[in-house]
Length: 137
View 1 (cartoon, rainbow, N blue to C red):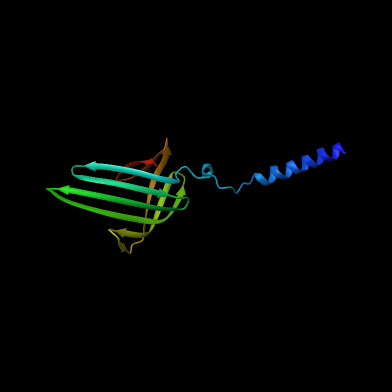
View 2 (view 1 turned 135 degrees about the vertical axis):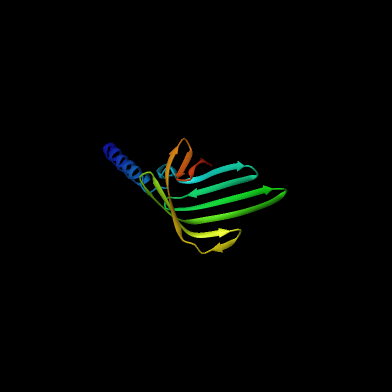
C-alpha cells in the first residue's frame, strides 16, 4: 500500500511539473533587446528636441516634440509617426503608415532604414545624417 501512495504521489508531482512549465508563458525576457520605450533629447541654439520611440516586436510609434525659441518667439510642434517595423541583421526598417503633426493627420506612406545596435540599455540608431542614442525607460 505504501508503494501505491509513493507511485501515486510521483505521478501527481509529474502532472504538476509538466503543466506548470509552459513555453507560451508571457515573459519579458523572451522579447528582442530592441523592444521597449526609448528616449532621446537634444538642445542646439534655442531648439530643443525630445524623441520617444516605442518599439514592439513588429510595430513602432515615434513621438517627436520640438520647441524653437528665436528672438523671443516660441514655437512648439509634436509629430507622431507609427507603423510596422522589420529587422534584418543590424538593419531596422520603419514602415510609416500614419503621421500626425500637431493633431492633424497627414496622409503619407514611407519607409526609413537605419543601422542599429542595443548596448547597455542604449538603442543606437545610425543613418547617413548621423547617430541618435536613445536611453531605455
